[in-house]
Length: 428
Image (cartoon, rainbow, N blue to C red; front, side, top):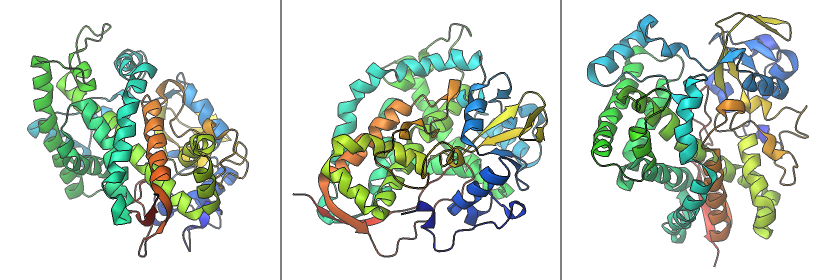
């Protein structure tokens, strides 16, 4: 089944002038718009956001590895020159909380490399292998909590608590606080969206400040009594080149963006997308059940490729650039559109199809590429593997429950199902 036909009437622009990527209805199913952008305007300036949207696979690969031409710096890092709502929000953080510093994802080398060394140690292959039994146990345990019901909201009952519980353990937060933390990450995601009113931006900031005070207490405890959590390492490790540990402002930036949003929301969204794709592809479901050892790893990669949790991120041009005949001035912000590149027919045959025998499925860009390749990718892959494996082992068959809308949160950068109600027959 061609995935883009999920919506009865997806928005299909007749011409490039009709493309509106920031429209919520387009974001609900952006793939027809991606097609026309790749074909007619591979470098396209979005009239609503001003971003230069890049959609072809080869262009994204080139940009992501070219740190001489493109920067991860973001305008929001320039606190002294913020205007309007952004300035109001910044002042609110200064008054009531901690103004978030540039996060790891928003830094360039050498600072990025120096700071990332702490995370690389925590996410090294041996460390992920040590965590694997806990991830497996949690995946099956969550399922066993509702298996006899024969129905669930897969998003709320499984896809959210699986990665969020894991990251809470790494951050020293108790399991019972996951829904409180989830409310904060939801607010953070809304706060980085486009077109917010001042009231909406202030609400999102106040939610993040509430989270800051929660985590500040943990920072202070870990400074007094370090433990074996990842957060303890982040709080107490001196970065040699800086001659100091991270400041509170730097820690708070990491907690929301790179740790809780980056470490849980993405896996949540991929888990939900995978079950949605299986509901539409019964042959793939049969193949997975018949031989999970053969097909499951490729299925995980195909989910990430087809329904990338992060549809796009930004880069800044460090100099004037010309690409496909379009002049991009120094200082302009590019949106590298992973979701479009991952369905580029120049790189993937039959790109809209779920193919469990696809040989280059793992070459997708869902985790970015280059120096900013997602450091949590190995853990995310293990979470997806055990999350889907538990589903295969616990469920004989399943179907979408009546009333599902399959609607996503309206967000320019992320792709997240709001809910996914399913009925199922437990495997005996």
